[in-house]
Length: 130
Image 1 (cartoon, rainbow, N blue to C red):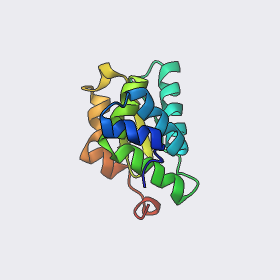
Image 2 (image 1 turned 90 degrees about the horizontal axis):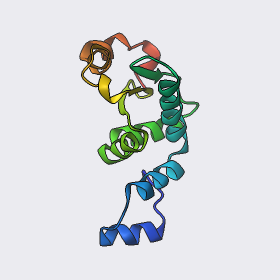
Image 3 (image 1 turned 180 degrees about the vertical axis):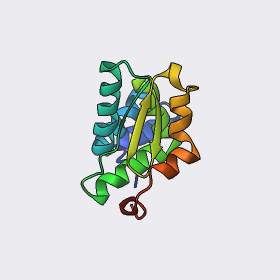
Image 4 (image 1 turned 90 degrees about the vertical axis):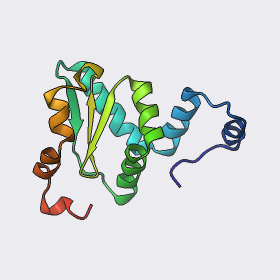
């Protein structure tokens, strides 16, 4: 299961009354490793002048890798994180996370990061089965 949804939040979702803040809190509590990676990349972006920041540190275990995959493969989770942090997230190789300033989304850096070429150039034998 991707998220540990408290009963109260699930009840509100059934009635259609869930806020972004409640959803993001559920993500933060359910996927702490993914939250740590994303918030760290966002902090790096905020403290630097570059149009994006990224982290390609391999997760310490498959459980943590699974958290990243669940967070960034889900449109709703990734979208909630993007709205919360005010960035555009990009994902590559099952653990490389990039955070882009909104103004950089149509930049060469962003297009390179999400390109087929970028994906191929970031392959290595140890990443083929991650």
